[in-house]
Length: 354
Ligand code: DAH
Image (cartoon, helix red, strand yellow):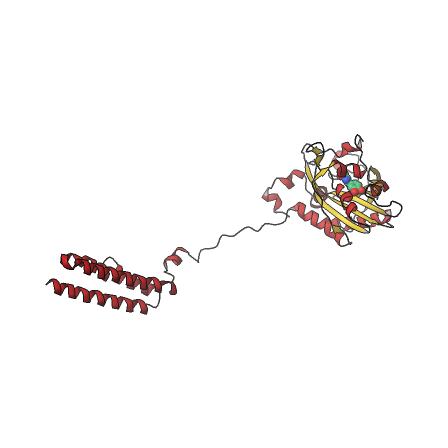
């Protein structure tokens, strides 16, 4: 009896093994393979049933029959594992978790900040005139921020460039002009450069002041640079930036690093008036120029020969012009922005408009 059972169990095991291997080999897709798996390993599967039939096997045969069933299970499992990766199906267990019909997660595309955009616009106008872009450090020392630019210690003009000091020697640059001196020390004329960057001043923040803002500095040095070259370059810049109808005005001014110096105005881009002069009543005054018809946009001048001496150039041989403008101011005018703080608040509703 024991022997018969053992023999028939053995045959059964072999038979099941053979048919399972055949059916696995024939399975054409993952669905078919899954059906084979259920047929053999499901709750009522043929292999599962074999284990259940172990109760009827005599204790003498149990060890061997058990070993045979285990080895059958192992062989058939291995055949499943080897076959599965080659089949694909929408009902594949991994694929089931990914519904490719769901709409994807749209990533918002960022874009350039209005200040960076304005810097690029300013620089590209000067690049079209042959200028090169140069940058310098935001942490400066007194020498480059002041002395090299003819702003001596205790001189009242230092007040105009009120400064954040880091220690006795180092400070956060209060303008981009120090890069003029740094560049000239390392390079020989002729050259034409623009220097964009951040500058810092301990001003109380309000609609028109920020303790950090941006400037673009310009410097041209060669053997025969004239004030008319400065006027020509700046007029072309203003027209490209604000429109062909823009008029320019140079007012005498003072900067320690230029001589003569000028403050440069453009005709008001809001009221477009340069002829009315101050209006008589408050209501009629242009909100941008206050009725003056002019708006200041930058400082400029012919490079002071003292600066050339400071950097080792021969002031008898070279001449040059320089200018410096506030980027926020240019952007405020160009885009009609009313508060400088908007640039730095990261309000997406503001930034999206550019
Ligand atoms: N550095 C000046 C400022 O921050 C701006 C300036 C004026 C720069 C005249 C120049 C210049 O190069 O020639 O106010």
